Image (cartoon, rainbow, N blue to C red):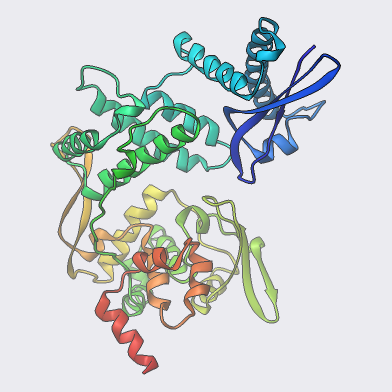
Amino acid sequence: MATINFLYRSQKENAPLNIRLLYRANDKDFVIGGKTRYIISKSYWNNKHNLTRVRDAQTIQEQNKVRNELYSIEKHILTAFNKTHHEAVNKEWLSLQLNDYYKLDIEKGAIDNSLISYFNTFTSQKKTEITLSSIKKYNVVKNLVLRYQNGLTSNIQLEDVNLNFKRSFEAYCIEECYAHNTVAKALRTIKTVCNHAKLNGYEVSPQLEAIKPRFKKVSNIYLSFEELNKIENIESAKLTESLTNAKDWLIISCYVGQRVSDFMNFDKKMIRIEKGKHLIEFTQKKTNKIMTVPLHQKILEILTLRDGNFPRPISDQKYNKYIKDVCRIAGLNEEIYGSVKKETKTGNKIYRKVFDNYKKHELVSSHIGRRSFATNFYGTIPTSYLIYVTGHSTESMFLQYIGKSNKDLAMELTKYF
């Protein structure tokens, strides 16, 4: 009588499960190990897989999915074992049976080697690790690939993602008026998905690693302290209540360094005072990281005028529109190079970034607060502290993010000479 066990033996957060075949023959116990292609998370395996009396619907669904797959593998191996003499059973035999299992699945259509299908597999396996906004970004790229694929004679397979694919895909995107860096980000995403497929045992092109998306340096728009003073000093009579509300949010964002998805949810209940300093504690929506950030005096001044309350929350769409109006009224009319989204043809409702010289207020968007914070305080606050607030993974990423030129950075350096 043979039995099958599955084990999680990796130190990584996500890895394929190991399989162990145990049987007895001629009064001896045998244990043969192998590795499946079924990737799951360590946290699920350690904390959820063996739970009983589960009430959470998502956990039940996840358990059923994993158990059904493991049952299918177990059934395939044990059926083959019962047809094989025990002397022929060894590690190589087990590996062959696993390969045969996945080959059968491909023939049945359970495993689809198409790039589009694996996008779905990728987001399904990653849904417990990445945010909903990240999943949406992957789906945006998947839909772009679908539109590209519609002009081809066959579906794109994982192993088709090679240097020829890169050249053809880039040409299609340029024809469709996509910005250079948008195309580069899409290729980076496609490569990420293909590498995940490779880890999962799928065949990919040997040229995959040679695909290296090239990004162009773009102007990073930020609001200087001088420009922020102009915004603060707009005469109240020139602003409606909605614009005043947006103006206060804009100033707050430039002194707290957080994404709009986070600061727009700030509430006075999140504030606490320690040793006379005002701190705000919240969980970042994108990273799920708990943050504690000090509140700048400029923010406290706004709260004082609002009886301790933050401004009224508004939608991202309205916020982006209102802060452009606020900056226009503040006189931020300097012509600089940047991009705005415009229809590719009048009335077709297909928008792409168009790079040109624009008045600065036209280029202002919700992201400018985080970049202004990072840029304005660079050189005056230690970089490690700034990175903590902005949430960048590395200092190199942070330095690429801030909006100062090489000349600006050189002048900052002279302070230490």
